[in-house]
Amino acid sequence: QVQLVESGGGVVQPGGSLRLSCAASGFTFSSYGMHWVRQAPGKGLEWVAFIRYDGSNKYYADSVKGRFTISRDNSKNTLYLQMNSLRAEDTAVYYCAKDWGDGGGYYYYMDVWGKGTTVTVSS
Amino acid sequence: AIRMTQSPSSLSASTGDRVTITCRASQGISSYLAWYQQKPGKAPKLLIYAASTLQSGVPSRFSGSGSGTDFTLTISCLQSEDFATYYCQQYYSYPRTFGQGTKLEIK
Image: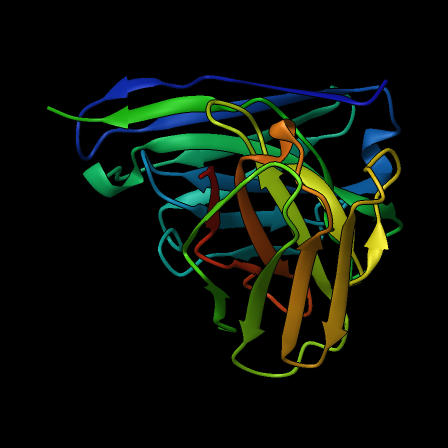
């Protein structure tokens, strides 16, 4: 079945960097857009970034633009989030999520989510 | 960015009750709206997409309606497993945005 497994979370000091990974299985990863969504402790969901199925288009939340980079390796069925210049407010559970449709459509909702990986930014 | 506003932020209800959660978009989003359910310590789960289409496997007591800027999620007969937090989310434009969530608690 469709499965997304995040990894790479941990504790990092303010100003530090971390790279998250999301391993995909059970579907043709190279055909689907992918998202990162985060949730700070006790807070709601915040969309972070999106990458088109072929990596040709990317979108970011203003809160992470210029600091985070989304990328993918379709040969490894893996999605990444490189996080630089981390701040305390980046502390959250980070989820990867799959677009419902394939082929690069714009109006797609997120239909499958991973279980998340926790990032803590603290000195 | 499109702002999504849910009401109420929290709701107490009993098993068997009918409850309605409202979501309002700051601008028209046609029917590009999804509803998610999240239980503590778990990932969000898709319930409804296209404002009113039930995701496969979701019980029929869940229903959604609306278009443009005003949307509702209704649970017709609450079951114990429905006590959770619910989020609406627009997929009309980027950045994708979520409502702040509605926590449904047992009365």
